[in-house]
Image 1 (tube, one colour):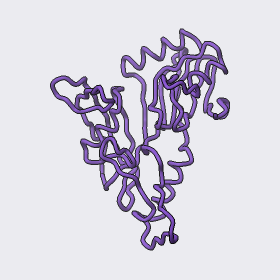
Image 2 (cartoon, rainbow, N blue to C red; image 1 turned 45 degrees about the vertical axis):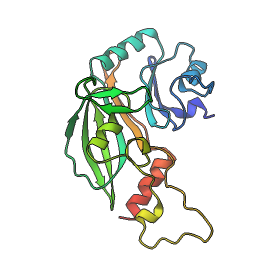
Image 3 (cartoon, rainbow, N blue to C red; image 1 turned 90 degrees about the horizontal axis):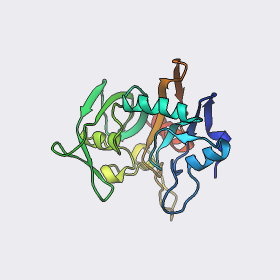
Length: 236
């Protein structure tokens, strides 16, 4: 279990901003796993309330309010789409996107999958911009305007740019042998993927504090995404 203090990237009188590690749930899960960000935050500050959520596998920036007033203040900004959220995703294929907007309505299904549904889906918009091109992959900046479940993942699949390791939405694992020219696997060993989860990271968050001042925070890549990016840069 990570030490909550080590996750904090910014803290003031109203908000604690943390860099959530992958595989840690934002809220308590029904499975009885008690290692949630909410539980850790409440142990650190008893009135803590998480202001938004990240999927369990997704790493990155998460805002936690210290008071009910701070929680309401940020919740209203989320509701009125006044919060800037920036995610980084490593996707399959070469994609030169310059602030491309994908506006496709999404419908969650009972099995936990989300699909595009122009009749029954709720409006969803994401803006995509290319940060770096590699040999067979692309690092993208993703700015969700709305906050639907699995929104970035489904919209990227619609662009034929599924996220690496996102097998639910058309992505596949990435191996060193895929990107390295002269790759030799040791005899009698099985090659492991370079990352074990969906390659998506909540990189930055920008919103207004209670004093009206702009708060802008970013979360450095965790080890697995940093290592994947290093390998992609090395083998261009």
